[in-house]
Length: 117
Image 1: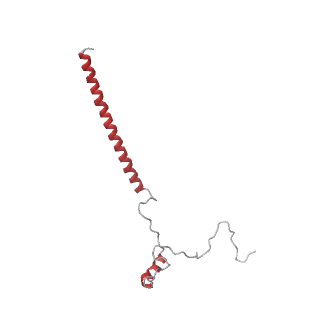
Image 2: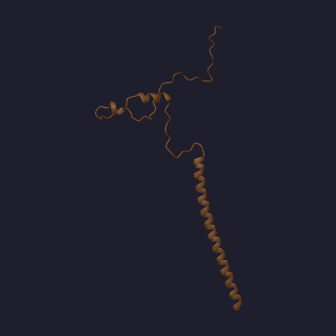
């Protein structure tokens, strides 16, 4: 090979290597940016969509139970010298009550009580 062809080949090899380094660097930056974007979008969607929460859910207390709890004596005033009580002292524990009326079903037939046959 002549010296001219060798120098030309080395210049083309150096240019090729620089191009490959640029492509490799650009690919790395694009990969990192897409990963950061995916995490940011996931966090945004998690906050925006209904039914998702990152905090603890506090059960709702009905208005009647809230006024009853407000008028009830505090557990510390009724305890016997620090003895443990078997009833829960947490105000967020719901109280179960019997239903005021039996549930109706759609399959039941209406009863006529207006005097007809």
